[in-house]
Length: 167
Image (cartoon, rainbow, N blue to C red; front, side, top):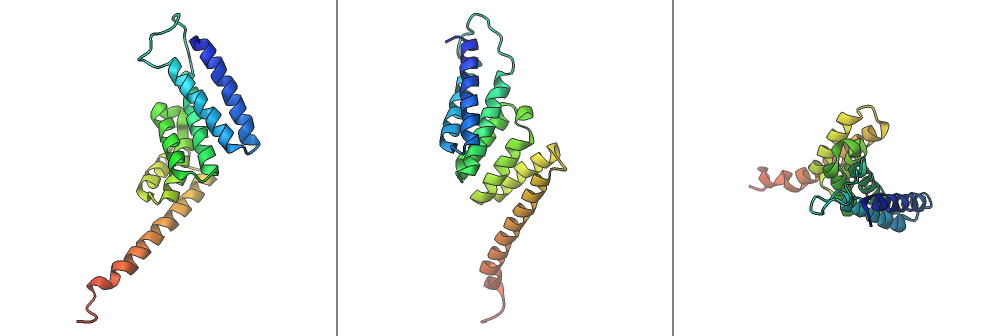
């Protein structure tokens, strides 16, 4: 399959995934977005020889969007580890295309996993890219609550350990 044929097939897969997602078929959406992303990566794989010298503008960006969408599907399915992995893959591939959405999704997944520092780093990056976003500001509130809860639990667990009571 030539690079242009792969790009066209990936576009069809993405359209199928988009439709499946709208119909709440998260598994199908995830499978098709992932298949599309991998196909697009094959087009720009530096280990493969270029076919017919064809140009493939926007291919990395399209793969990035597919990975970001995979992250969204995983979030909806409460598959936190996969959600953060796909979001970080999108950021790794093309940070400018991934934008605040991939960081936001990684922050949400990180919070659910209890990886609060990792979540905070992603949320901070997301807020730098879209400082006025209501969804980001709400996630900031949720993350602050989660951090406060962890601190309170630690204080309760270790607070009496060094007190002078009982001596």
